[in-house]
Length: 304
Image (cartoon, rainbow, N blue to C red; front, side, top):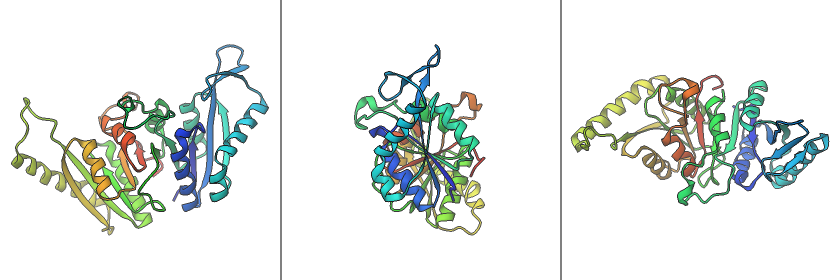
């Protein structure tokens, strides 16, 4: 299903969970795996020095430095390499998001795997909210292929994947995410959960809707999912429709946990805006940061 997978890493401990999935994913689908590391940003001066993203120190760049970085990557991931096989390596000087997108486009990558951020923070800490990496946000927005984001070790993954959860708000952007989730489930032969959270935080004039009104909206949402998504699945019948009410990201995470979901698929953003103005939706951001399983961000249908 995936001929070429790009694992974007800075080789820090924050990428360890993503690295494990990248190697196992590649072995599962017999994919070519490329470890890609943008190790520094060019200076504005002579260009002879760069600022290393990991150490923050200025380093002189030469042919030897690039080879040293590759050797460090091999040492870092040596246990995974011995278990799953030798990947390819690419290192480059530049802006991480730009170089990742450029390489993926030029080399026709089918899937990008990366961590949610490059810092080792406790997910339970108050400061954790809002530290989704800017590199990840830019890659998830502009990538023509799905971006698999991992923020912590996956507790439910069993040889990838058995239960896929597609979270939708019925936006135009969600259709690309649905197509990816459906094709993945159909290809693997696993169960697909079509999930929508009715946001009861949104009320008119500060009045919370009554239960009868909520039940009516739930019924409408189920019918809409049948019309928009089920109608496209031909003879695929291994699916289930679920509509819950509550705070969207909370309900989606609860649902994924209760169904032992091992992949959540969502659109990068939901608002009908130009790509240049799109930002990662708050629901997507919270799910990425808190999910116990990988989250696939899909913004385009180009490489589904």
